[in-house]
Length: 217
Figure 1: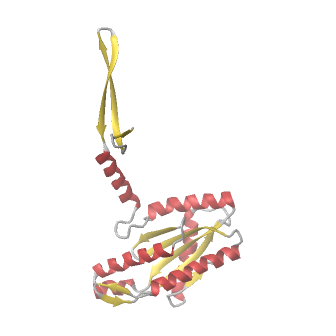
Figure 2: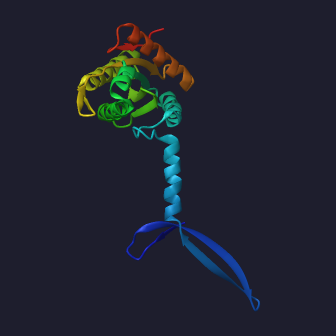
Figure 3: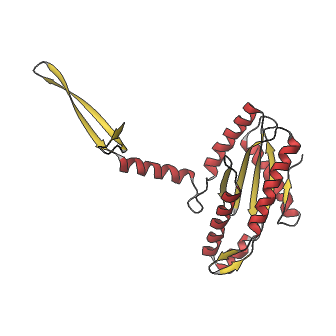
């Protein structure tokens, strides 16, 4: 249950009722325990299961759940969405030349820039390694217009991630490749949308990196 302190602050309590029969009269004792610390520990564990510890972004597990929810919303409201699969070009070179600490700094900086580009209601997530996903919702129901909207966000993301990084006190430059796939055109599983975005990402890599490509059948 939720209890309140004298100053009005709410806090969680565990309440245990125990019946007592005293000379034929039924009475109860009530024990209340403040479980704030336990709730905080449970929330920490829950967050660890759903949040990438390095970047603070949703991880693959939470992303899958949000994609399923986005697909259901698109089917319900008739709007389209887009998945943007992002991979950092030559990330391994930074790890090899500057060390893993610099690589971690780069991943955290990319996460911060993703947050800046992400619109309210959209989701930025880390898939693992140097792979990220940006999920856009509530785009136009017209595929051509939805593609244009997603492409505009992708270009902003390219611009943001092309700006120099300061890694270990040293200015560095890194670029992304981005693959975009629309969803909501038909009922499908989240993995299918991710596969299309991954195919578009491969096309961007094949085109020379530091660019974006939209999936086309």
